[in-house]
Image (cartoon, rainbow, N blue to C red; front, top):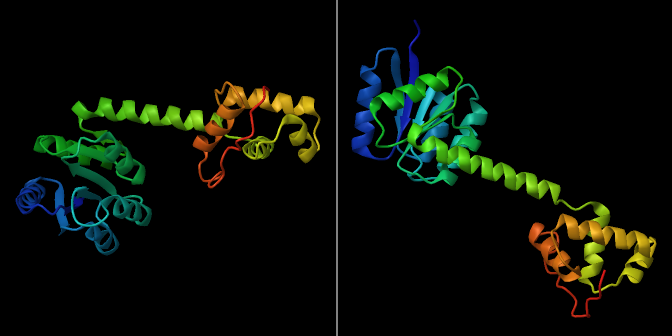
Length: 228
């Protein structure tokens, strides 16, 4: 039976020694390479192409970027994050970058072995006591993305918001866009519903929050805001 080749990247000397010893004595595993810097994640990937790589997040360099680059270079390699960070954003960022497991330091050696074996079977593994928090955070982010997508402005709505920012009233907006005032009123009603706004001012403020780069440098005109 072919052994699973393992690489370890961690900048903590004592922990590194422990991981190396664990991988060397584990039947069915073969230690291929070791590193101590985020840049080693990518260089080891290119040179050795191990079956799995155990990496820490808290070390010199951009570990998240290195994980992403390594995952793109060797999509079949299983990246197992082994870290002390209980920050769910870190876990999500690592998983989205391409890691297949997120194991907390302080877990047992068996937990780490289970993570490696699970990822080699094509599974995602998260330390059990931390998994519920990560799943909850992922669900929250999915809902946020869904809400942002549903609130995305159409081209016409974007044009109307820009004219509102300039203090234009419905008649002026209708003239500028070659629409009827009734049509503009209809768009305004839709915008208020979509952006959960109560008036014209809240519409433009909500639109700026939704896409600040699109309306960068633009400010709401001091012209009095009339009703829809």
